[in-house]
Each structure stands twice: as structure tokens, then as C-alpha cells.
Image (cartoon, rainbow, N blue to C red; front, side, top):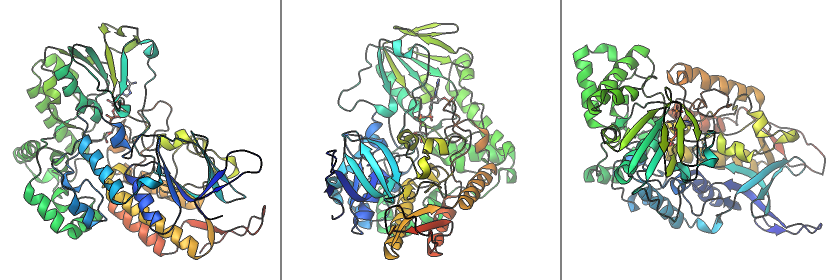
Length: 559
Ligand code: NA7
């Protein structure tokens, strides 16, 4: 039976579709995996529960949603100069409709849709050791047998619905920023709206809601070091030059994770006097975007340096917010930029409006929701609409919710119960032929996402090509490599201030999740290492040949 076709079952159950690779998720990574692997002649099918391609950009349609850093003309796939030339980005921080249009354009350009099955959730995946293949079931009852299972499930795609007493009893409308209604327009006019959460999504949506709603109440747990985005139309010369010199732009992204113009300063804050430092901070503040985070090299590693910039931002917040009591509630008290950096467009100014109330949940915790609104320790807040901008079970959540079962019946949920161990953020001991994009312990969101996708996708493609050439059926990392990689990830993180802050980088936003910093800091070295390791015989992995008969285990070989 050729790959990609269905094999009828003799027991009368649904036929099984045979694939070389099943990809979960039709976002940036899933589309690249399809394009790359199909180009090698593999039978590949992508499944996604969404109604269209685009992943996070399909789900996050809330007002104000946009790329959360000034990616400008570089927030795109890098592999095809033709694709780069064919698309015109307009803003420094493209908005959600622009990114979604771009991803649809990519799907059309590479004729991806014919192998993408939408409105379909992958419900279970189990590694069949005898067949050396993954058995997968979908929400519409389809059964698939695939040699490779590729998780392109997204890092921020499993919404976190907080466990707040009485929430289900609330009679008004409830929306999550990460699961915004697709068809219906959410109306805030004339309504009393509550927003819980002041991360990137909350900070983006709050000014929009404030402008429309009758009254807005923001329920804040952690105040933010939001920086002025100063979003603006892209400079035409920059767009033209980057297109004309794309090979060089791509080289810089590979080497530094971003174009050279955006690479952080190599200067230490301690090289400057206080006056000079404040001037550097002020210039960076006026420039907007990530400039303030990047203006000295040691802001994220040296607590003293971090304290200087943190004080600077706190002073800016005090200058902006007219009511000193409200300003006091907005003072961030963690290390600057150790949560995902938030960009704002009029966020702090919003608190100067008469029709906006800020509730500090640290001093006034929510006791319960009622049918009419929220009751806190000291007040009642009647609401018609609630917006949950409460983020995600990030990086591991989406795959843990599918909970693949690997060798010896090991469920991923159990494997990761005390820590999300992987090899290179790509693969997991006990889960042969499972590859992850942007998994835990990969550079993930701390590197150019599109380039990172391409680098991992190319590695997966090369590895599968290698296996085919040598008649190998499975690949799996060895425990020593996994342990060493975990130690390397932690060691790198511990050289920075990141692990000291509660954030979704550390899993601290989800009750019960192991607290660990699961992003590899050092993107360029990661991608270099990935490809060198492949060239050196896939150090850290073992391969097994195809079994010769049912039940025979076959020797495990290292090639
Ligand atoms: P984030 O950045 O995780 O922000 C979620 C916000 O919701 C944050 O302020 C949380 O406070 C707050 N939160 C979460 N749970 C609760 C409960 N139970 N009660 C009160 N407040 C809560 O998610 P976003 O969607 O804003 O952004 C995710 C990423 O998308 C972002 O980093 C960009 O990369 C794009 P906390 O800080 O945990 O105290």
C-alpha cells in the first residue's frame, strides 16, 4: 500500500491512513514542516483544530493584537528570497490581520492547503513499538499510522483559564485573548468590562477596550515594565534594502538572531557615569521598541545594572500616570525585562481616564465571581463582559494536553511531571520519532522564530533523509544526552536574572507546573550545534533499523 493512502481494517473499524509524517499544527512551524518534508517526496498531512492556517495568529484576534517586538520587515520566513520579495510589510510591529494575511499568502504560494486538514483535533498519539510507528486518532474519528510525529503545536497556544471561584457562575460574556471569536465582532460599547491580566495581550487590549467601553476595570496581579512601542510605518529604504540584500540579512539573523541593526550594545552600564547612563536610557526610551533592553549588555545579568534601568522605567510610569495612588499600584517590582518584554501603545495613559479603574489583586484579591461581576476582599465590581488576558500554559502546555504515549506506555505528562527534559528541545527519551518545533529547552521565543523554525525543520528533514538512506526506522535520544542538555540549558539560564522571576518562561504562571527555566539562551550557538551534530553522526541519538518480523526487537545501532 503506497504511503498516504488508507488501509481498510478487517475488524470493521475505520480504515487507517498511512503517512510518513503527521504534523500537528498549521502555524508557522507546521506549514514549514509540510513544505520541507513534502518536497522530499514524503507523504505528509497537517492537522489543526483551527478553521484556517496561521496558528497563534488565527486565534489571537483581539483588538490591538500585533507582533510584540519591532520585527518589521524581518518577521517572516527567511528561506525564500522570492517570498521575501513578494510581500510588503507596512508597520514596524505588524498587526494580527497583516500577519495572518501573510501566512495565508505563504499557504497559497506553496500550495499547502491540499495537505492541511482543518477543524480537526489530534486527540491521542501512541507509539506502536511493534510497528515502529505512531498511531494517532483525531476528533473526527480518523485513525492514522505515521512513521514520524511532528509537534508544531505552538509555544503560546494552550490558553490558561484561571481557576477563580465562581467564574463559571458569571452571567456575562467571557472571552480569552487567545481564543477570540472568529466571526462575531465583540462589542464593548455601553458595557462594563473587566480585564484580568496585564501581560503582552492585556497591555495590548486594554487601551482599545477603554476607548470603547462604558467602564473598564483592570484586575492586575503583577505590574509590568511595559515599554513604549512607538510603532510606525516602515521606512521604505529599509524595506527595499533588506529585500535587495536578503542573503546578508539572513546571514545576520543566523549569526545573531536578528539583523545587525538590532543587536544589543556590547557596552557595560558601569562604563558610563550616571548622567551618561540616564541619557542613554532616555534616548532608548524615545526610540521605543526593545531599544531600552538592548542599550547595555549587562541589564539582564547584573542586578545593579538591572536596578538602574528598572528605576528609570518606574520614574517614567510615575511621570505618565497622574494619580500617585494609581501610579504606585503600577510599580513593577521584579527584575526589568525578565518576563517577556511588553510593548505598549498608550497603556499607562489609559489609567488617567475617569472611566478606568485599576484593581491591585495583591492587596485586594478576588474572593469570587458572582452572576453580576467580581467580589474582591474590599469591593464589588459589576461587569457585563470579562476578558481573560491570562496567558498560556506556555511552551509545553499544548503537547502535554495531547499527551503522547511513548515506549513502554510512558505518557509525556508523566515523563515531564517533574521537569520538561528533552534533547535539544527537539526530541525526548522514550518517544522515538517524535520531533518538536520550539519545544522546551530550545531557543524557542528567544530567537528569530521563523529562522528557528527553518533551522529545526531543516534538521528534521536532513535526519529523516539520513534514516531513509540507511534503512533506519526509529531515532531516539539517549538519556545521557538528554540529561546533559538539560544541565546546559539551566547553566546558561542561571548566568542571567531570568530564572529569578515568576513568568511563563519559568512555568510559574501555571499552578502545579514544575518551576524551571525552559528556554535555551544562546540561539545562534544552538542552531550551529544542531547542524554540526547532524554532520557528526547524530551524536546523542540512537537509531534502530526496521524490524524484520513482528515482535523482533532488532539491534539498536548508532550510525
Ligand atoms: P502572559 O504574559 O502570561 O500574561 C498573563 C497575565 O495574566 C499576567 O499579567 C498574569 O499575571 C495574569 N494572570 C494569569 N493568571 C492569573 C490569575 N489567576 N489571576 C490574576 N491574573 C492572572 O500572557 P499574554 O497572553 O499576555 O502574553 C503571552 C505572550 O504572547 C507574550 O509574552 C508574547 O510573547 C505574546 P502574573 O504576571 O502571572 O502575575
